[in-house]
Image 1 (tube, one colour):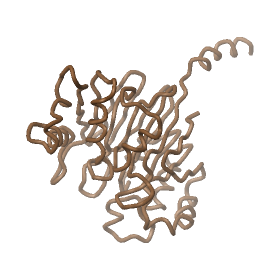
Image 2 (cartoon, rainbow, N blue to C red):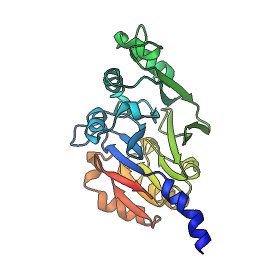
Image 3 (cartoon, one colour):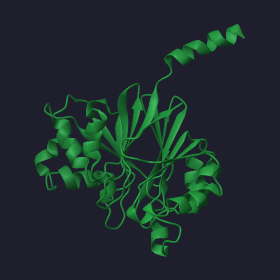
Length: 288
């Protein structure tokens, strides 16, 4: 027994402190909530930013995070309420101490939605909306480089130091979208993003996750088009239970769901028996 304690003690002493913070818990409408955005902290430093919807820029500052500490950014898709504040982050980053490149993970394009590389070119390229910031896509002494990384709709995995990013394409109508699994020292945090979750892809990705962040964007009685885009409360419960996640975080809270949260919880509880958390802006959750 003493030997076991001695063997475990170094692991306990040197394991990282990891936490999940909700920057934006809302959707694409005017409300008290910022749009979708999330941070993962490691040992007191913000290391991963997932999504950057409207208001994320302000919440990031309020959280005390620094862009120079980020190992990567990731966008689940390029809808406005998930990506609109990206230019603001890049402009603020120009005034930061960051010098090393910043990876930006995103997905393929389809229809009116560009892939992540085209998306950044349309923002910051020579013919882009913010062409005056084209240095952000090149190596210059005055600015760090934004490095778009395209993940296709199959399973993808990439390692950034001690951070492993797994990703899979999920259905969000006809919009290319990605769900992310961030693993750090065996701790697993999954971001479903916007998805109807009609397949079992999200279940497979989230298997055994410490936290699963799912978007509660529609009530159960929504019309077919809304259900084509977003997961229903009943399906949320099924996914969380089948995946065996420890904590379920309900985010992307829209006004159409405010008055049905009790009903949604009852539907989720028909399947899921674990911990359920309603997301609030700047809420911080320890990953133990």
